[in-house]
Length: 243
Ligand code: GLP
Image (cartoon, rainbow, N blue to C red; front, side):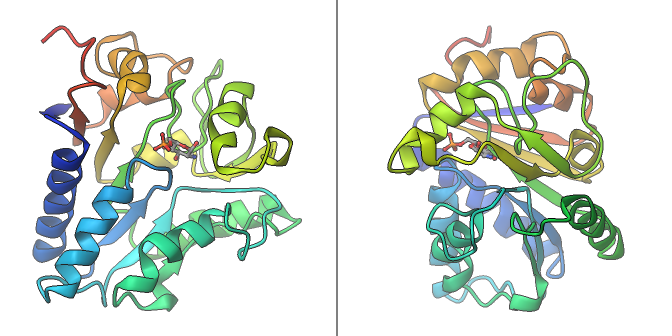
């Protein structure tokens, strides 16, 4: 696990965009795993800037998003579909055929999850998975649990996640109670991992993920076992690490 600490969110976002830029330069047809949440927004903005300056193209890139809420239509502003098009895809030259996001409105969610895994396999696996981090240590929507999850599946969200994510909704009752997410096994299968975390409310989760025991009670801790994981943190989220 490689840890990089930056002075603030903007520096971290620029470094993350640079990392992705170099990755795409060395593999223009890379398969990327993408996160939502407020943390990666700065990175997406920087990547869009690089695209507008003609420094990078996404035309041969394939993407797989990590997760999606259940029962939110794609046009719902809180769906991760909407988020990705609004914050990233609408502003770059990615081929829409190469964008993959789980559908939270497919009633046959088992079929949806299986088909997603099949698509990832057909694409040759994910070269670089970019992750955010929940305050309880979740990655994707893999909540603290008694065991590490396997492949893409449906999960019941924890109350603390519902509470944390309610800031995007009109009220807490509107936050979906279920989501579809790539599992821990799907994430560990990715060839490289880049995790981003900023802000003091992530400090405990970062401490556990980096220095704590590897436990499904803090899902991100499993990344200690990944052979190629990079963490990009700001000072605040890194403040509890014993340097
Ligand atoms: C959600 C997403 C995660 C994300 C997390 C953190 O729960 N499912 O993938 O990492 O939020 O979000 P934020 O970056 O807004 O703190």
